[in-house]
Length: 600
Image 1: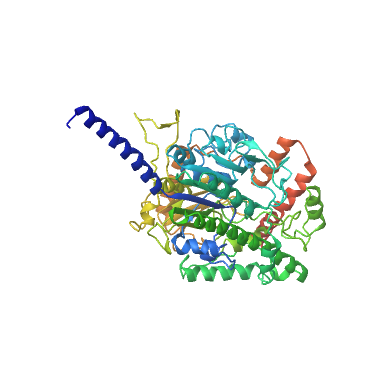
Image 2: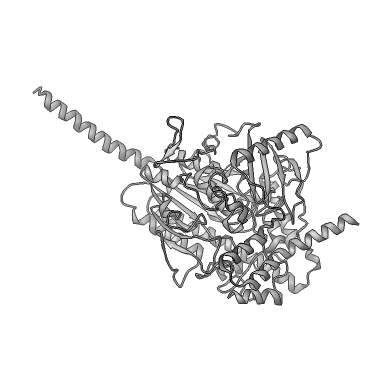
């Protein structure tokens, strides 16, 4: 029978079947993506990067993926998070600094609000529009008005903490600049359970979200931005017990041990030097009781890292149980380097008084447990960043160079390391390409998405590195600029110019080859004046192209946080002042000591 109408019907039916089943097959072949973001984790804080901390889950990811030894992010959380989720420079994304640290002179400008601008689109939005389920459980810190929460920026399900940090055991703020710890579930304010511990709870929520749609065959994107190891540093007792004797040798010994391990692992060159941070206190000058207390501060920190690793392991075990592990790609990194804030000697009467007003104690016996406030201070922070210089907030390598692992059984790179320079804006386009999702393309000379004009992604996909097709993604003469709170840098090939403001930096520009000298010990500005000047000129162009504003004269980042807190709350001025003094004291003492040394 040769009925033309019947033949036409058969052809149309076959086309429909092909579309339906072909689309389903294509959807099934797309990988799940789990993006894990640690908070304030230093360069050598995990075992694959030279740490003594037990991190078997992260080690297993490194063994089945690609480790990056030259990956850079912003020196503070919110700017990093904006770049990671959009692939756009933090200044263009509206988050040049955390909102708590922006001076009023800058917030008058539309790109200096400290919250994620509407002129950028998140990878969650792009993935959701292409059929992905999108989940987030953890720290957001990109805005808390309804139009800025994850539920309005592409996340189908969310349970997030909107602040810069919060307690890990209960729902309370960690600093008096906040009236409360602001947690939201699917866009609405919520409360935490009585048995809350951040790392465990965030993984529980992620598993819950994944299971809620596990039967529909669609891939998922799960973003897990941990609170670990942000202030306050807290961990369960069983993890703390494992490290009680680990740090008795002090921060200098730990920094040296990690340096040697980093060399052994090939993370830094064998002939690289290591600068001693001048904000590091004299361990030998401490009393036995002080040494014991300081060692436990770091033991709690290590415990918090291992607890995070343990709960990541729970997520991976669950993915194996439900048959999704082999089709999942993992991205693990940190938002910036180790956190130096906190007094050198926290066990003082003044410190105890200030913490008590905030509802915290820091007794040795309960350090790290519920009701306890702990930090590691600038001395152990320099060890967490070993062998790099500086730490969080600053533009030294210790503030910007952090671990990055991209892993998955379906990826070609297994237990491989690359020294190629990479940047935070590269994560978004990498995730999009791994998911087979195209970035928005301009039409008629204008880039728009969702009915609005948006900024283009400036990062590069890391897939050529993952596939082993290239050994670098940026040309040697291609500049990548950066600025945060007046601390500045520009990368070009193997080189970097950097300026760090006080009280730790001296406000001068330096030139380093960060491949041969990742610890920034040998200034090349006088040896290579032309390169130095060319890079300075490129930095000026970067500031003009990206609307970078100068910081006001006398700007002090930590002081600005306190001032902004007072302005917002008009509250406990004395308490905020005390906490400010405690935070700044080690840096002030360092600055005075350096001036004294220069005058002698």
